[in-house]
Image 1 (tube, one colour):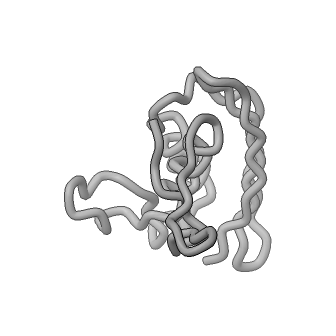
Image 2: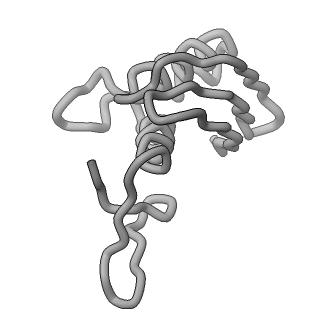
Image 3: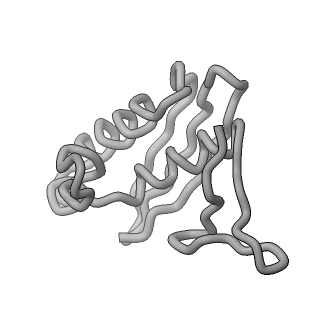
Length: 112
């Protein structure tokens, strides 16, 4: 399966054409899209995404929501290693994820 490649929250262009993504890179892009989606923000399913206001109050919710987003992504089998830490206004996520196409190492910073 292929999808349009994103660069942050913008479409990626190469030589005037929209870039496409597939395989492991597509699964990783879907995970990142889920991590940056606010709960209730997607009109087709208001349960998708992370509840940022609730999570700012309690770190336990952060871990739960991030793991839920990763595991609910198509193609993801399991999370082998997971570390989430909060410093100032940043959430640091480090995870080793097993998918049906191979393994993904995720190192992401979410700025609140």
